[in-house]
Image (cartoon, rainbow, N blue to C red; front, side):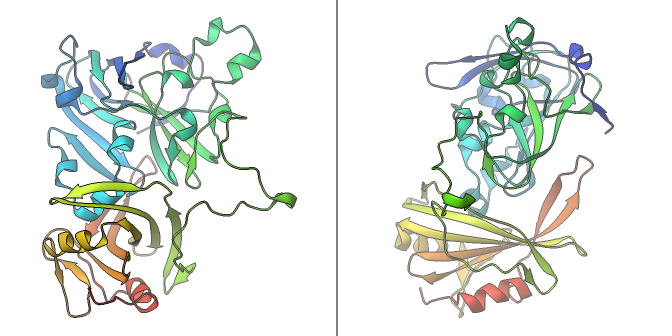
Length: 374
C-alpha cells in the first residue's frame, strides 16, 4: 500500500469517534467504518457489537489480530483462531493484551459501528509494547480536542513524543481507511479526536511501556548513569551468534500468569529468545519458563498432549510443531521453528514449521541445559 505523510490537512478525512468508559472498566466505542479495511480498537465482534450499531455482524467480512510477541496474524472473525491455539502459543498470548490492542476489521459497507471492547484497558503507564511492530489502540487519554486547548504546552502533551514513556519509537503510521492507504505519523503531530477508537502502527526498538513525561514508576537510575538491575529475569545464556543465527531479541516477563488447562491449575513466568538466519528467513524461538506453582500438574497436562521421548523431551505428535523439556524440577525450555515472510508494511508473518531437535540452535540449548528425567 502507498504511504503518505499525515498532515493537519489530511486529518479532515477522518470522522471523530468516541470511547466512553463503562463501570466495569471497558470502553463503549463508536467509530465510523469505511467500506474495506479499517484499523480500530480491538474487540471480539460476535460478543462485542451492540444491538444499536449501524454496522452489524453480517456487515463484517473479517477481523484480524497481530501478535507483536509471536509476530504473527490471528483471525478473530469469522473463525476465531485464538480458540485453536497450541498450548505453547497460548502461554505467550495474553487475552487482556489481545483485546486492548488495535485490530484490522473489514467492513462490507460504510457506517458507524458501536461495540464494547470487552476488556478494561491498563493506564497509559502500563501499556506495554514489544520490540518491532505494534498495533496500538488510541484511547481518550492519548488524544484531545486540540483546537480548544488553551496553551501550546497543553497541546504538546498529545504527541507521541510526549507519550513514549520508556519506548524508543522508530516509526509510526495511521491507516486512512477512506483511501485504503498508510499515512506516516510524525512523532510530533498532535493526536486529536479523529484518532480516538482507532489504531496506529508503532515500531519500537525493544520491549517498553508507554507513559507521559514524569510518569515513570521505575526506580531511579544508579549513580553515574548505570543501568538498573533487572526486576525479574530467568538466568539463560543466549549468545549473540549460534552458527549462522543471530540473536534478534531476548525478553523476560515480570508478571505471573496462572491458568487452568485440562483441569490442572498452575502458575508460571516466562520469556522469549529469538534467533534469526537472515539468509534463509528461518527463525528459532526459545521459550524459557519457570513454574511458580503446579509444576507436577503441568507435567501431567503435557503428557496428555505431547509424546515424552527417551531423551526426556516432550515432542508434539500433531500440528503443535514444538518441543519442550524440563532442565530443573520447576524450569523448562520450549522451542519452536518458523519461516518469516516480509510484509509490505514492514512487519513479518511467521509460519510455524515442524520442529527438529537436531537443529544447531536447539542443540546448543539442549547441551547447555540438558533435560532431566520427569
